[in-house]
Amino acid sequence: MTRDTGLTRLCAGAVTLVLLACGAASAQDRAAATQWGGFHVGGEIGQSWSSYGWNMNPNYYNTLGANLLGSTIGQTQSGLMGGALAGYTVAVGPVLLGAELSVRTGGPSQQTTSPWFPVTDVYRTEVSWMASAAARAGYAWDRLQVFAKAGWAGGDVGQTIVDRGAGVTASSQRWMNGWTVGAGAEYMVFPGIALGITWDYTELSASGVAMNCPLCGTGVGLGSPVVDSSVRLNTVMARITFRPGP
Image (cartoon, rainbow, N blue to C red):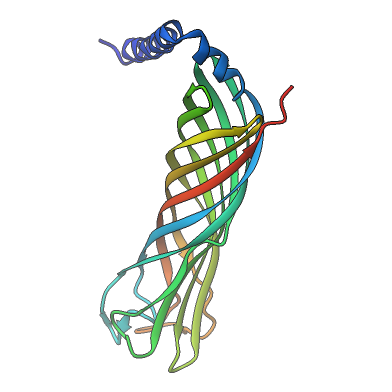
C-alpha cells in the first residue's frame, strides 16, 4: 500500500465516521448542535503547571576555569493565567467543527538556584504571554458539548541568570513557537451564554538563544550563555463564552 493510498483511506474513514454519527444521532441532538454554531467570544482563567529545560554552552555561569560543571538545568513551577478567546463553529448534524484563537497572560514564573553555584547564582524563566490557533471537533447533546482541539501555540518567554555575589546578570526575551492539544466541555446555561472547562498541553521551544550579558567577559571560564530552551505547560481553565447568534 502506498503512502498516498493509506492517507486517502484514512481521510475516507474519518468522513464515514462523521456521516455515521450524523445519521445515527437523534433529531433532538442535531437540533441542539445548531445553537453552538457561528461565532463565539469569551474569557478564561485558570491554573498552569510548567516545566522548563535549559541546555547551555560553556559560559560564565557553568564553568570553573577550564572545567565545564554541567550544561543542563530544569525548573518546575505553577501560576495563574487568564485570557480571551474567539472562534467559529459549524454544525454538521450533531458534530461541531471549527477553529479557535486565544491569547493568555500572567503565566508561571519562578527562580531556581544554580546546581553549580547555589550560594550566588539563580535562574529565572517566565512566560509573559502566549497565543494559540487550534482546530476543534466536538459533539453536542442538548445544552452540553464536548470537544478536542489541536494546533499552533507560541509564547513570549523571558530568561534571566543572576550572579548575586558579583552582580553579573544575563537575560533574554524571546518568542518561542510550538504546538498545543487539549479537550474541554461547555454547558449552555442561557441562550447564547455557556460555561465550560478546558485542559491544554503545550510545548514551546527555541534553539540558540543568545543571552545579553555585558559583564560575562570572554575567554576561559567566561562567556555569555547561549541556550536551547523548552517549555512544557499543563493548563486547566474555566471559561465563559458568548454566541450572539444570527
